[in-house]
Image 1 (cartoon, rainbow, N blue to C red):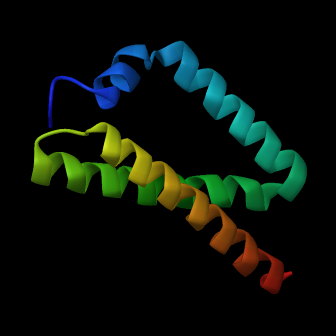
Image 2 (image 1 turned 180 degrees about the vertical axis):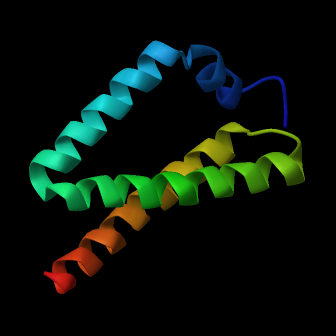
Length: 90
């Protein structure tokens, strides 16, 4: 990974406070809309995203802005697919 570019900006601006706030908003929204299934959705998504980020980190030596963007897009697609699956289960 490079030490310049948008990936570096995202990494530098990522703080525990921002992570905690974003996580809390996502969890509350998921639970309000989907009840306990929201927690399941967040947990599955978290495991998948962390796995993908770990693969990028191992293969590339870090994360770039393109990696962050790809992970974000994949996370959005996964949420939509998981919501479709959840809708069919209920």
